[in-house]
Length: 201
Picture 1 (cartoon, rainbow, N blue to C red):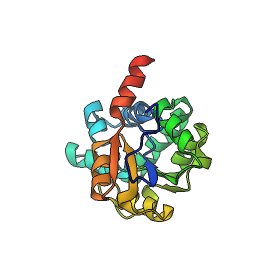
Picture 2 (cartoon, helix red, strand yellow):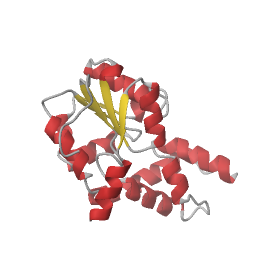
Picture 3 (cartoon, one colour):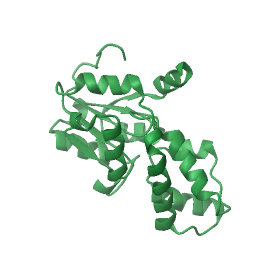
Picture 4 (cartoon, rainbow, N blue to C red):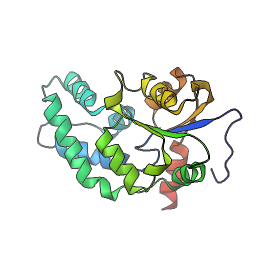
């Protein structure tokens, strides 16, 4: 990550947001835990990370199915997102990935493709002072199907005007990497980078 060694043929780079550019995943889990605390429904940290990249309302549906309960989908998702938004200013940058985005800024078409909602993605990018680097931002509101469907990445590539096979994706979840594969894009799993960053802190 120190050097700009992009694979041959790459003409655009697409970044996931949560867990890739910003280390927001612990904050998302905390927001879920606090939101669910009064409901009697629990979500293990392992399940949370397994569901990385899944839209918030869909996670509520999955929890309902797993626990045989009836959490109100829209209300529960909105409560979780409100709590997360309160915690968001605490999110640290994933420095090596942010450094790469800054180095590529203005040199190559860049996009964000996130399973999050636009308002929160915009806030995250603003907090990282990266908004100006991206020619396209695609979120769960922009597509019919979220990750692992390829829709988000394909929409981002189309907005950049670059063929999918010439795009490189930076991702931190199995579902996101599967979406990149289905989109026919090259990809890099940033989780080893994130873990190294956490150990160094």
